[in-house]
Length: 271
Image (tube, rainbow, N blue to C red; front, side, top):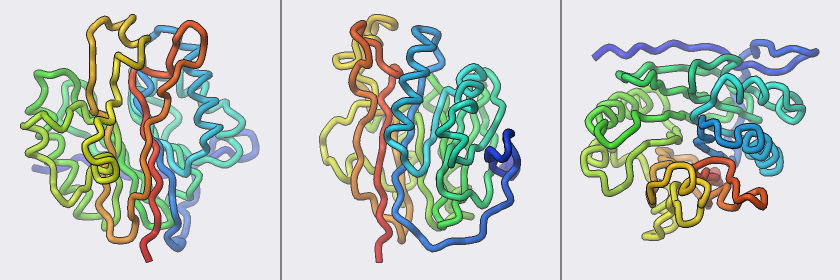
């Protein structure tokens, strides 16, 4: 199967406008913190949730952020943030209905996109960092009936990453739990699922309506699933920690940043 792949350059804020970045030269490997978060395109309390997301990202200040369900309205406000403009590079200044985006405080050598077979416009975006690690993010096909589609997408994504990137971190909303047999069978065992590698059998639900009462109120269906995940394949970077983020309401009305919790992980260069 031929893969529709194209490369492009990152953007950074220079002298009052977002400009294409000159690709960075290679730099030595460094320890990294990476955050992934499906920020929910839904309209419920959008402005409040958006502002709380920006506060959380600015407070945490990871090295790389991968976002899913980024809408044009969210991206427009994100690009106005002083903290983003001060020190970050970004993968895009335009998205369609909702999409994925990568923000990085580490210099980016190159960005690439791989279009996936999808009825929902899904694609993989990957950032090859100057320090040698590639961070790739995806929002796999949604809804339970699309298991075969997700498995097919994984069978495209993983070989494409392994063929060109010796050290790679695949993150995002995978839309399947470890107990979903079809998609799990499509996982390449060379990619380590970071949460169970560090937390064993702890459930690590990224959708948990017992905690996130906003989700229960808006969507009504009880949910307990670990579908937002990080997979690492590397001989140089070792996962040291991983935690859920956005697990508390930010106002007295019980509003959360998203109906998903995010994940933030630390990766140490293994000498």
